[in-house]
Length: 216
Length: 297
Image (cartoon, rainbow over all chains, first blue to last red; front, side, top):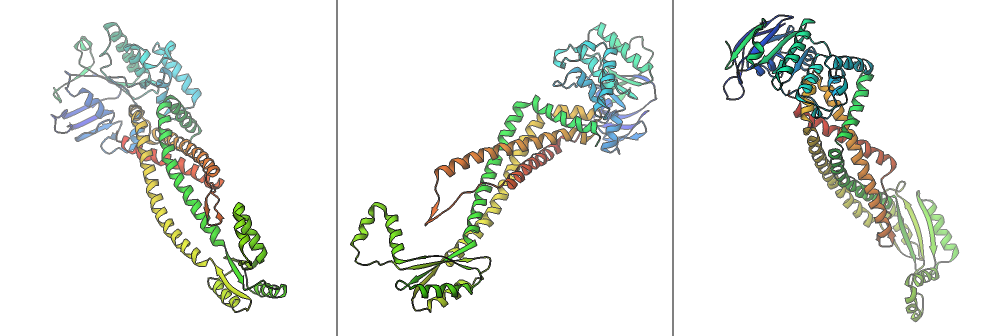
């Protein structure tokens, strides 16, 4: 599903963010990417959903070489990848329903279908009563769930979550993790980047550890 | 384009305008000013053009007589004129008519004329030469022919003046096109930057749309529709303001050149429609240019 071959990424003249990263993640896997702040976790996720291109090396996602992907193909690929951003990246001027509907609107799904799926997803995430709220009116945990709802509404092949529990208290952390496991159980490949050791305790999932841009 | 998309684009564009109404208001205002400058220039240009055409269309010629011509001689001259294409007799002004007209023009000061022992004003036959039919040499031919007649004292015509006027107009047109082109570019520059500001305020939105898999076209089209609407509204306001200025100007200013009064015309309905469409297109182009730099994600 995801293959990285000797990927390097540098930003300007700074220290490289990723150094010689090779990685293979199979379909249906649940993988943690871990490491301290600045280890390159976010950069690695960005490479996977092509917000950044490798400085050298190759990245293949769902059979597509991201170095050579065209704009239109990239858009189509991103529709198969749900991303939960560390800072949520919700549109403050659109309400919860509209934020979640966004992923379907861009695909040209008819409005009646969008309504049905959005209600369903928001109910699933316990946000049914918050549909008309705007992101700034919601708590961190609620915003996180809206971001997840937007990421999963079109049944993506891959779900990337960058520090999905970073701003949450332990109870909410458990809740979000349970949610991610449930999404994974339906066949979605889930990749979670986190610096929290607490989250990794007792896990049987595969852990990819990064330090200063290298896999350790 | 799927109907779902089209509906989404229009709905989104209108929603964005409503949500960012202050920004859009400022944008429309700035565009209106830019268009007003451009449209004012166009209006002045259209009027100059109109006046040249009006003056150039027909040319008047005055045939002055040595004394009061008798009816038969006058009829003979009129008959002779019929041989020339595009020549029509406007009117005959006898010596007495000329004096009467002068008296009227002098008004209260007409008493000055009472001191005259005899009427010094010549009788005159005014003729019109249509520009469409008469060649450039016709006025001269006519003048030579008429001046050979005994009772004719002198023939005057305005050809020289019109030629000079038309040469000046040609220069004005050339300068106008260059100046108009520069104004158009200036308007486009102002508008592009105005739109850039509204887009910049929403760069996060563009980024998010791109990251969830929206195609460039999907992200751009609502902005382009917004730009076109903004441009159209800016153009509409500019035309309304220009029309109000026009009304004020024609009610207060009386343009007279010699005895000829110049009427100031407004833009024709077709031209207004054309300018409105152009305004929309400029808004659209402005958005397209402004959007370019936001699509590197």
